[in-house]
Image (cartoon, rainbow, N blue to C red):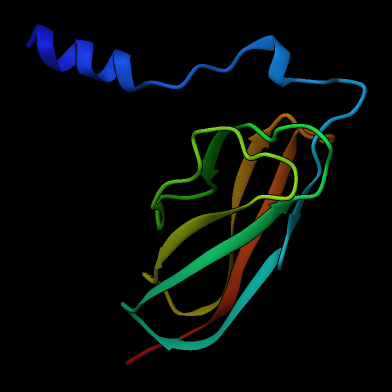
Length: 128
């Protein structure tokens, strides 16, 4: 048990104050802020990857990514600093559990200004 814990500590990346520049924060630019999945059948899983670039002059640190509801599953996000000009991805899966038009979001908390950005998945879920 102790060896498992120490492995996790040794592989962890640390966010330090020198990676955060309040005067010149990183700029996160998403290829799209809304993904429209058009029409899917009830019970379908909608998978999408939001892609972004750090267009700022300082490293981008994503602190957390949270889904707005339990039907949206996050598949991970970059845990290490994204250097200026580098790209990253945030893959998500939306489980459709009701019919009609839906619009769900995920929130990204980072060292950007503003600190929180929202991305949306929207579309229509048709009944069987």
